[in-house]
Image (tube, rainbow, N blue to C red; front, top):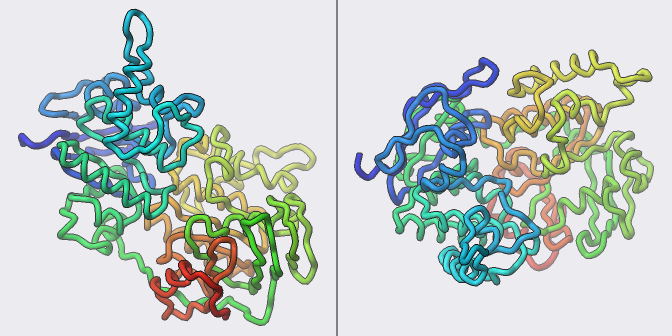
Length: 500
């Protein structure tokens, strides 16, 4: 059709003989926000990498603005009008905003880069996306949200026709998200087609026009956003109903405290924090960005050195030696799986083995056992990977998260601290991770779960600790009647509330 800016038809792609895309389809109209939805490993990223030129398609057709696009390198695709903004920004931190915007397409006058003209043109692009800083500001000095705006400014400087946003709100606040949505609405008015990838169903319903759902590398359906619901999108994604109801925890022993934190302080980030964790409990930590939840967790395990306070584990005070605390059975699964949770250049097997070397070295590393253990976890956790020897960098976000979980499951810990365990992960993979958590408490472990997703907090937690500005605003029982509104009010409250 004439108003279609992009058509991808019957796209097929294989890796190592395994088909990861099977006749995939995507059609985007001018001035449309088209949601691309699917579980981790559904083929979304592969389809976008074929569009961007990062991967070569085996079969299929790509038509951009009425013209068929032959396979071409990424630089040529950008010139043709397709820009992709990934979760991991493609910016040079040591260079300025304007230099990043014109990197690879410098404005040259008299054989030299015309910096004055670049600054002038960069300012126009920055104004279009509401980026309020000097074009000469270094990227390293910007917040995550502003770096994202630089990426968008960079994209529209190319006369972009299709803009792809991959998990654009994963690391920004609600206020910054609303600013981003306003920019997207302005780009829509300019006729730009936008492909938007996210696992936050609520925001998809707010910003999207239509939604294409993929599952296991195949096209499932395209629906109008105004005619669908979160439940329907979830069913299309995973092929089954997913429950968000609070489940009973028969493994909770309220009379047995396994971890007691008293008057914990770290700089001005953790202030007089006190709470108990019971045997078999999932203790949720809620709060806005900057509330001090991650800092509390890292202070407990000894990654941050506390200023004062005590941490009692199984009746004994523990110190600030991180390695010793891990050895004793307290482990922390970071929200930043790529920088803190995994070594991306190493294989799945090596990542699982890394914190468990004493079990695998007798005295030398037993590679056969390393691979055997890894295969067991790949099977039990349903990790989608070609083999245990595949580098972690080649896995989807959800499967990377499962590898992080696997390496600590093998450690057989007593207390697991999950920090944003499902960030950037689809609802199907979330359900699998929730089941892993339930299995852990069934086997006698206890869990602290930090999450910004209140639906997740209310589904999983036996009690909820609400933090604000480094302090605990309240600890409430989650009896199934606790609501998101009540929890949010506690997150925003100026003074401490009730404790339960």
